[in-house]
Every structure is written in structure tokens, then in C-alpha cells.
Length: 167
Image (cartoon, rainbow, N blue to C red; front, side, top):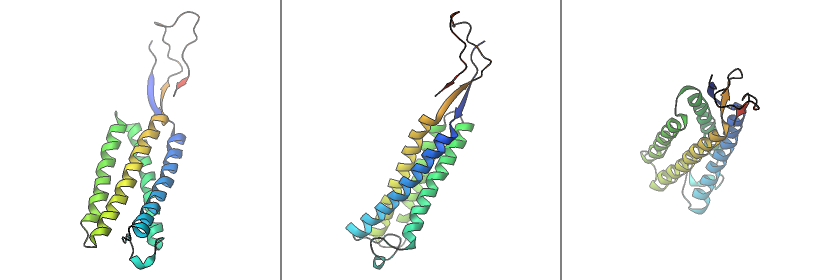
């Protein structure tokens, strides 16, 4: 009887990667705001008078960026469990969601520099989340083999049956 393989995911590894991605996304939001306000002198999220560090909106933007990474991790986990090509669907969903996040600030009636700066920050955050979670999923995917299955047709007499987890 051939091995019975079931796809699976190392949830602890995937979610640890998702948490690390949330930190990266939050820090990327802060760095983007600092560059826009401090170097380019472009207001993002708050009036210029708020300074390089901004106000509570900077914290909210960073927090929402981290939350987006955690939502993306949850989406990937669901896709791994439910569809045949999870990374392909994840990439398409994330690219389209990122595109919405890039286009949305461009439709607002605010200073053009603020529109572009916010769109660029959203693009960087969306791409970072997409790339990191997609990459981390490769390390978190596992193929589980049923312990009772054997590969007798190809196994030599002196080899034990395969009862391990491939990573």
C-alpha cells in the first residue's frame, strides 16, 4: 500500500512568522512616516505641525499595519488548510488588497504629496507582508504520512517503514 500523504502546516512556525511580520510591518510604517515627514517634509496622516514622530495617528497606522500582517497570516493558514494552491491564491489576494491600499489615498482630496507618500508607504507595507508570509509558509508546510501506511513495493527488506514527518 502506498504512503498516505496529507498536507499540513506547522501552525506554531507560521504564526511566529506572522507575529514577526507584524513587527516588521509596524516598523516599516513608522520608518515611512519618518521619511515622509522628516526628510521629504510631506504631511502623512496628520498636519505638518505634529512633527516627525507625529501623533497618535502614527501609532494607529503602525498598529493597523501589524494587524494587517496578522490577518494575512490567518488568511494563509486558512488557505493552506482549504485550497490546492494556497500560496498562489494568497499572492493574488494580497496583491489586490495592496493595490486597493495604494489607490485609496490617491482618491482623497488632500495635498498631492500626502497622497503619494501614503500610497508609497502602503505599497511597501503590502509587499513586505506578502513576500514575508509567502516565504515563511514554505518553511511551515509539512507533509504528514499516515503511520500505518507502508511503501512495501519499493522498500527493501532491511529498511524500516516510513513513519516520520517530512518538513
